[in-house]
View: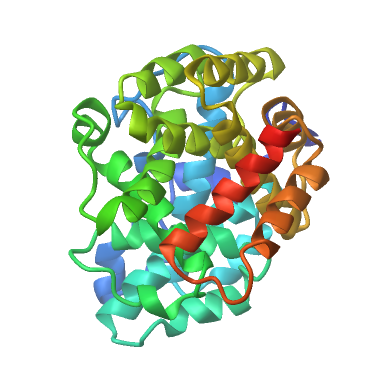
Length: 333
């Protein structure tokens, strides 16, 4: 019988996701698709030389990335229906992977974003943020960002979050150790990519709050707010920390002067989960401790900040303003 895990997910029952350790793809794709397929071992933190620590955090983080790989390979094998067979707390991560594969296939087949739009209208209809982030992860592997302008006028900028995450995942020595930023246009896009890097730091440090804080503290002050935002998003989205550790994370963000950034990232993650129709227990806990509000109230502040942007927001500056308005809502509180 399966039971809820302390940090989200289920334990005690085999699932389709568990097969990834021995089955790299749901069904063997052919030709170019086979060359693009990902090995499940890519999800291992030890393989990437990321920090490891005792406890369930490592499995929680690796499980999310394994779900992403399953989604990627499912899209390659033209079996996106497999995403629905995953536990509800893993489907968003699988949609992220499926979006990355769809974006790559749209490029090599010159289909102008058709697969990505079909994914948004189909299996990922309740996970739009995951799709934009997943597309960004694909763009990080390319010299250009094809199809970027064809995504949602405002939400497309979340692709830069995915780009920043994948940039750090693929080359942590440079992105994390040397603090080298990906090649993007201007400070606005760098700020959005840094939120993705902040999410990556949560994984890189195995969800250990003291280590996450120390790593963020090694970056220049102008970048740290966006990194804290990403850490808050990841802690709320994927989990990996208990209540004491979440409280420690909030303490460190306050001491660094970026408490509102942490709250904003957490609120955006809570809003994404509420949109999916499933609310993991770890998200409820993180929202309360990091954003200082229940998930529905945190998400409502995100929505009100979006409305405050006015008619037809569509630029990177607008997306950053959305985040800034959300931070102000938590600061006023």
